[in-house]
Structure formats: structure tokens, C-alpha cells
Length: 80
Image 1 (cartoon, rainbow, N blue to C red):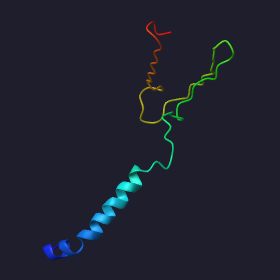
Image 2 (cartoon, rainbow, N blue to C red):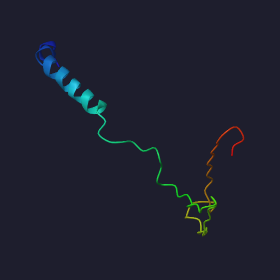
Image 3 (spheres, rainbow, N blue to C red):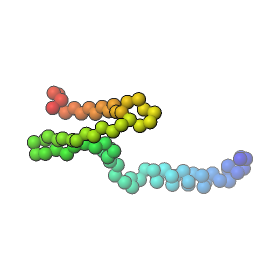
Image 4 (tube, rainbow, N blue to C red):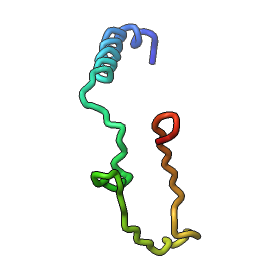
């Protein structure tokens, strides 16, 4: 691109940048940081939950039929 082309399109380039920045900065949706892909048991009135786990055979090419998953949650100074 030549300098003359850059000079002639500088106004429209700036307008395009401003429009793109405004589109990004406007909050069109509320973000939710809850990941719906992970299932968690529902709790009863006492705060207890349960789940039935069914083990499936490993897929072809996998050595072990399980996946390691850690979920840590802490509340207060004692963790309760």
C-alpha cells in the first residue's frame, strides 16, 4: 500500500477503529462465570447431595477408564 493510499483512507480507518472499539466496549450481554458443563448434585434441606456413578469402559487408545478432576472450594478461615 502506498503512502498516498494510506493518507487518503486515514479518516475511514479511524472511523472503523472507533466503531469497533465502541462495539467491544458496550455490554450487550451479562457474562456468567458458571460453567454449565460440570454437573454438581442438588442438595436437600440438610445440605446433603448424592449421585449414582456408572463406570464406562475406556475409549480406544486410552489406557485408563477414568479422568482426574479436582475441584477445590474454601469458605472462611476453617474451610467450612
